[in-house]
Length: 120
Image (cartoon, rainbow, N blue to C red; front, side, top):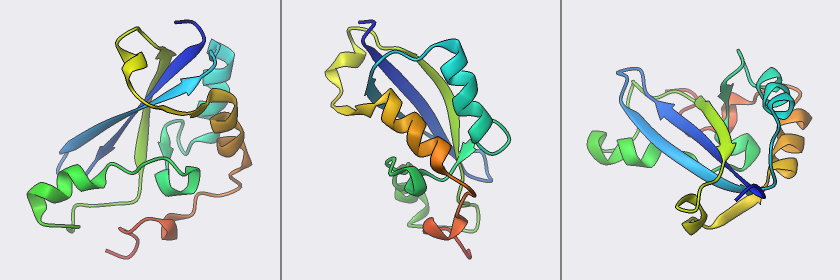
């Protein structure tokens, strides 16, 4: 399974309700690659999912709140990037690790206006 990685991320609203997501990525990320990724996230872990074309995780919480609420904000959180297991391989392939890393490195500034929660 060394040819694939799993990117784990989270959306946590202001009330600390959480929604988790994973992306199956082709390629293996070294510890140095992961550190490089984190250097480009805001405060080492925060990112705007829409800016990276990563599926946002808001909808799971909207099912309980009836849509966006005052507790919502624009940031998702990077949790970990690890080698994919045989069980992880059941997920659809999202992209390659290298492409994701390049998208993150290309961000000059995180654009909060890309989130539907901008201005709430």
